[in-house]
Image (tube, rainbow, N blue to C red; front, top):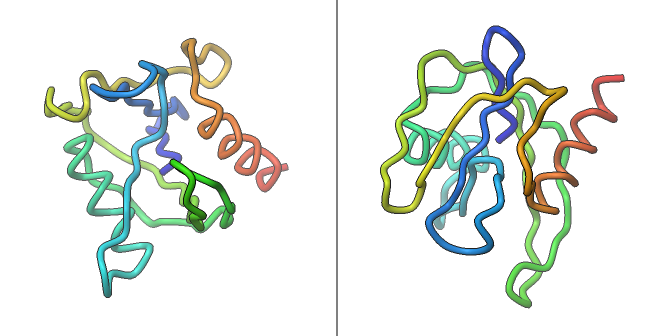
Length: 120
């Protein structure tokens, strides 16, 4: 989810596994779960924050670990401070859009390009 606060800062997380890159909060859809409900659940689980109204930015097709996936990219405003669980999420912070941290995952870069393209 592309989550921004009231100051238009972007919320990014760093996972406890993988490359150590900063990425957007997100995750899988459970059987029978709607994409919007999954986005809200995963976001709350990963950050401890609640998302406001969700806007579907787009759906991207990607191969993840050799499997085809449809990625529903949502954007929302959030309030509150993130609270990473220190199991799956090691760090979660807001960053100004003009000063995003490195390394930033390639999947995150693609989602941000989609979001920025839709907001122009």
